Image 1 (cartoon, rainbow, N blue to C red):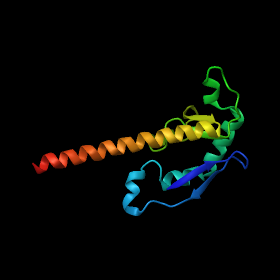
Image 2 (image 1 turned 180 degrees about the vertical axis):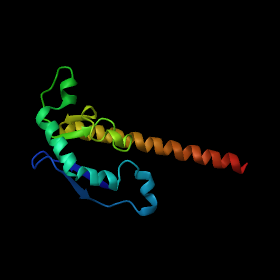
Image 3 (image 1 turned 30 degrees about the horizontal axis):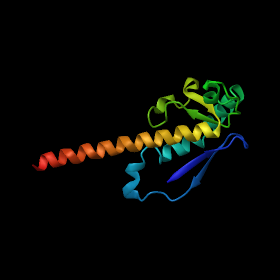
Image 4 (image 1 turned 90 degrees about the horizontal axis):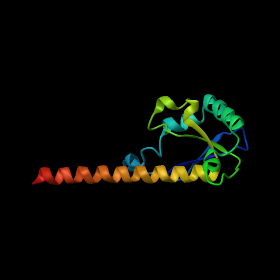
Length: 136
């Protein structure tokens, strides 16, 4: 699986860490996690410019500020509220971006991965049930 780490230390670039990629026949199960189009987008000059602007404009973690009581944490990365796989057209929409600390970013990413895995499992269960019903 390919992961990405967003670093604010060097021009807010996105650095890709290639770990073991899933076999070609299993890549369908990683939809939303493994996507070369998204990888190319995060390496683009346009994304670097807009994410750098966002971090300068909103330098504190927006999720930490919403906590009660508010926690002041420096933002280290820019995240899409609505992911690229969910709505590609919103990739440059300022209102769809949020500045996050690494802790909040990782928490959000893990929640999204879990949701997508559950959705995929539900699809597989439904398809299996339909096949069993067709077999009878």
